[in-house]
Length: 89
Image 1 (cartoon, rainbow, N blue to C red):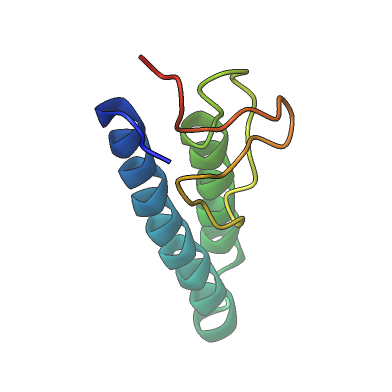
Image 2 (tube, one colour):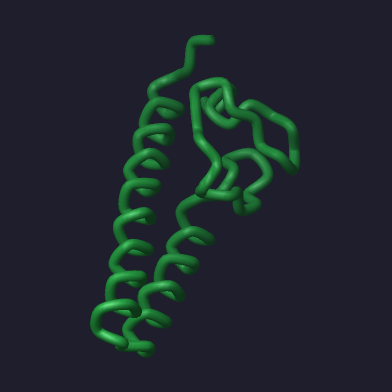
């Protein structure tokens, strides 16, 4: 399946966000386990979920997607069942 430049940019953005999300959740876990800093842990987790709801949305139906799901070029939105990176022009 061939995707447009917009689709490729969106795919790169989602993959970058997945890496940031994993890093932030690992940081929250470390602050909870090693520092026993509950407020920092809660703040990081809330910030992660806010980022997820703002960045990780379907371009067609504008609803949030699960960021822990692996995204590929042929991925479909679970809500509208359209290809995420197709028909973005």
